[in-house]
Structure formats: C-alpha cells, structure tokens
Image (cartoon, rainbow, N blue to C red; front, side, top):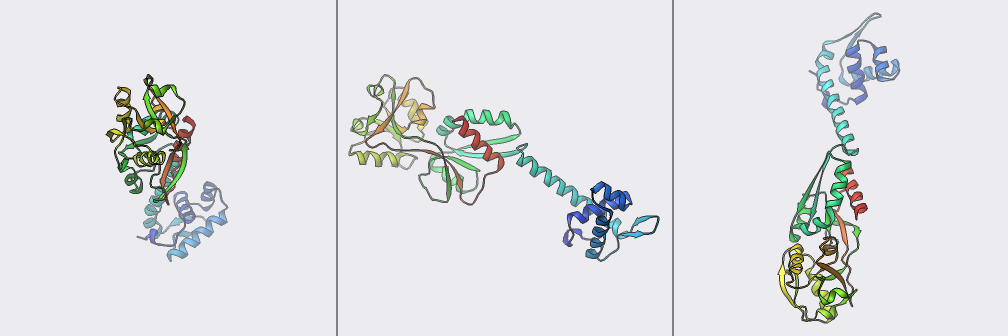
Length: 300
C-alpha cells in the first residue's frame, strides 16, 4: 500500500483522486469539484508523478483504477475525512458553537463579577462549557502561570511577572462598615479615622494586605488589625454581624448588594485598586474566551 501521509501530496490532489476514483470520469469529477477537466487531469498527473505509479488506465472509452489506486483510495478517503472533521471542529470553535473556558478567580471576586456575565453568556452560547477555578489568593498566579486556566480576574500584585493585563473596572481601597456605623454617614473617610480602631483585613501575604499596610504607613497611622481572615467574603459577613469594620476594595461590598453594609472610600491617601483580566504572556485568548470578556465588560 502507498504511504500517502509521508508523500508530497496536496489536498487538491487527494480530492481530485478520490472524485475520479468514485465517478470513473474526469469530467464528472471536475463538475463535482467545480474546476475544469484540465485542472483535474493535471492534479492526477502530478499525483502519479509524486508517487511514481500510475493510478488510472485510460482508454478512449473508459477510465479504470489501477491496483495502486485500489490500494491508496481507503487512506486518501480517511485523510480527507480527518481534514474535513478538523475544519468543522475549528469552525465550531470560531463560531462559538462549542468550546471550553476556564477562569481563575477568588471566590469573593467571582461572586461579584461572574453571576450576571455567566448567565448572559450561556443564554447566547449554551454549548460553551465554562469552568470557574475558584482558588485562594495565594494560588491565583500559580493557576494562571501554570496554564491551568485561560485567563484570570483579579489585581496584578506581581505586575510584569509573566502576565498581560487588561483593565476591567476601577476600584479603590475603602472602609466597609455597617449602615448604622458613624462612618457610614460620611462620603469619604480619611485613613486617620482608622488610627487605632479595631478593623478586619486579610492576613499578611494574602491579596490586598500589603497594599493596606503600605497605605496606612503612608498615612502615618497605627492600623489595628484585630481580626485577620483568608477570604474577603469572611470579612464581609463579620462586618455585617457587627464585629468590626473591614478594609478592602469597595467592589467587594458594593456588588455584594448587602443592605446592612456600606463602602466608604479611604482618602488622604486615596488608593486605587483596579480589577483586571490577566492572561499569561505569550498566550492568546480563544474566540469563546474573548467573547466572555466582552460580555463581562458589558454586564459591569
């Protein structure tokens, strides 16, 4: 049997060969392929030259496959089926008829950003499978840089560490307090108002804690972190229960829609804490992932 896959054949030659073999006619094959008879004849001659064998015996009245053609037809058909299947699969991916997206995000941020976007996206693209890798803050970059996810949603504390960033929404450090707390009546709260006040924040080494400590130092205050947590969602319910105010980006409270708590921007200094789409450097987003990011921006 001829080893077609290791020869210098082209897809056009294979399609011409299969059409002529099945139809036993150059003119009928040309009509099926929407090309001229001379083009089909040239393709068959080129294929015979590449393989070094005759594929068809020609007479004035008939066209008959040779033993070489009989031995090659099954492989040629299989190759074309695989190519057609590959083309159809890639078309499905590009047209969002199928695919998979995996997103790295902390649980608290996922609760804020993803419900509306996920619902909107899946209504339009129900055959796209979306996985949420709801990881802890200290695992976020490992998931992103380890190629476990298509992209991440968060803040690049390690900017330039092998990731590309695209700003998704603006945010800022705020004090989160109960609606009946004295600070809730103010539009903004200076850092000085937190001097010595018991507050809740994430533990050192987790997410935003380094920025909180640096900002308090710039304001020249003693930040009394009386309660440390791993997840900002824990800090939110503790604040809602009246344990103490929390310090975190405002979005975690404002998008949580909890009527018992409010977010007041911290000023002097005001500290930005924007949220980004993060992609590993050198990687590009799939059509489905790009569309999800578009929907996410629209829902925000």
